[in-house]
Image (cartoon, rainbow, N blue to C red; front, side, top):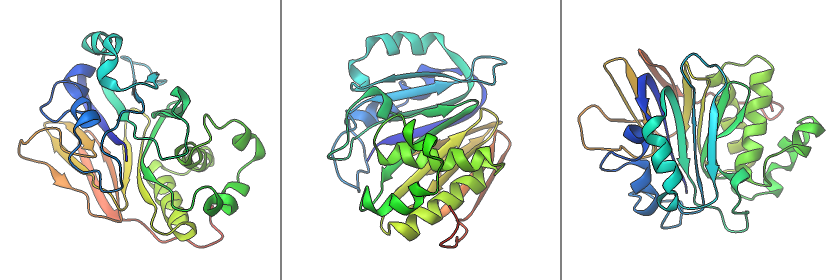
Length: 254
């Protein structure tokens, strides 16, 4: 059901975050520890997004191949340094395309987004929520997938002025109301802060020494990892972490 991570803190090379740890995102692509939503590996593509020093617009690198097959990314990751990174590996839901544009991170302007999970009853369960979006948002989805539509819903709220936490919380609550049983680990960052939801799947956070790392699965066995409870929303900066229940929403709220 995909795996993802986000990092905020002093600049580090991407390899240190994504490739090198004992249970890195690379290892989670072929030997994940928690695939409770189905599947055995995350081999249907991967992606990474990072913010170059001083930049507010991220760079994205996405491929529709297993992470372990891409020697170019392994070399690139050693030389790319950033204080804000979002990366993901993908296990495509049956029936959804295995293409580069379906791989996280999705992006727009300063934002990066990832979804670890599955929308139950797709696509019919999402028809009402999708109908509330501007038609141009639907016509410009990067891929015909549940993750791409979730990003359109989140992006719409961010553009309307919602904070990242409020946007993720509202979308998660609305989707759960429309499609009960969905797995909705959502993750968004603008390079200075991040927000994430844990809904019917695992998420862990480690905050120390002016850094915060949020992962589907802890990348090592060091002390400090804390599970994010199911049904909770996490918001964080390098120096602050807040975890609270996802607020309920009304049927009319997009």
